[in-house]
Image (tube, rainbow, N blue to C red; front, top):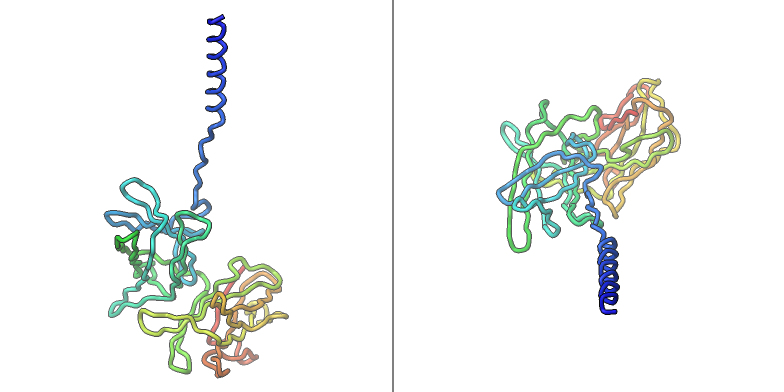
Length: 282
């Protein structure tokens, strides 16, 4: 009887251990940068800053950037950093920055941070720009800097110009990224050059819109609206009507809050393009 009892107890124990082992599941590792391509890594002795977007490259115009910081000692990723950055263009006799957002944590990701930057120019070989990161993790302060490559976009998706008020402005096309036939949500950013390092958003101006197809008799399209300021995202929005595929010139006129014309002209038979415009092709 005693041996039978011991054998039964042993079987129950082994069965319990087996079931417990089968019930334990290894957590699936999540790739938080899935679908993104690395643009650049910038390292110091302690950390490596990884920069990503969908294209894997910086270009002139508007760029979304996803950022994460890797601890060089154990390859783990930092979840609680406070990050500031400064893009800088080195010219032969001076240097300047460009419009760029603050860096914020991606709400549903543990290790990712997001920001945007608008490069208004670049050298023909993509050189000239650098990025400096100053960041803190807990009470420790760190810095990292390196040069980056910025390629020239095929179409004019950003333009820098002097307004009639003697202020330099930058207009950048943000949407549509993938234009289609019909009414597209159009979004642009408008900034002014306060000084070489500061490019604040310009609020409550108006940007008149007149899209044209130069290769098709310079015809326009119906149901467009002018660009108006949205205080929530601090961008300018409009309905952009594209009636066919091809090359489009988005002719613009910039007016200030007092409705005074700062840049751009109406399109007429004698004037086929505004001096202020953006381009797209699809």
